[in-house]
Length: 207
Image (cartoon, rainbow, N blue to C red):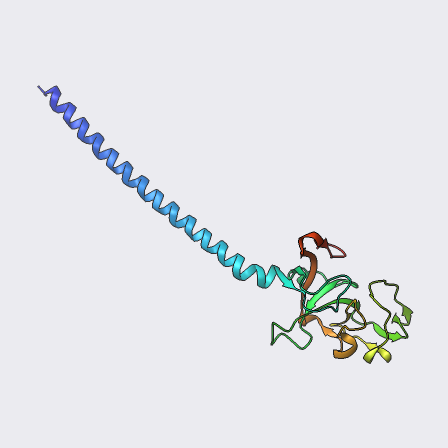
């Protein structure tokens, strides 16, 4: 006949073994969860540091007074770098671009789109003409006194844009360096985020 005490001891030993196994499995699950969470954090950091600024949105600082009185020297703006992969740039949108190509990423300009691909742009007196019709706009801080190359008609190719700064008297823009190619446009300026008391939505439409 079995001894009841022996049965109790055996059951206790079995329970101890099962508890140890459960504890080991819990530890393995915890370690696996920690590794997965850590991997997710690393991926998110990589996306935020490298992918988002390069391909999605980026903070850019305005350098100079050529966009007064819309933007001022030192203003921080948010640039949508993705939307122009889907949508075409539109007239009067403010863009960030590289006038001489992307070889020098620090040599960027902030200007407003005036002429679109395929259009004829000409400046007569202080008026801008698009396809021989006066362009109705009131972004200019002062009247235009120097038409630059637009004194004669400028015909834009299918991948070119004519841009100008709002401070027309001092702005170095397409009147001097010519049209901007689509491939050299970095993105669409959406809003000013600094100074904080001047936070402003700048996009003509939000993509």
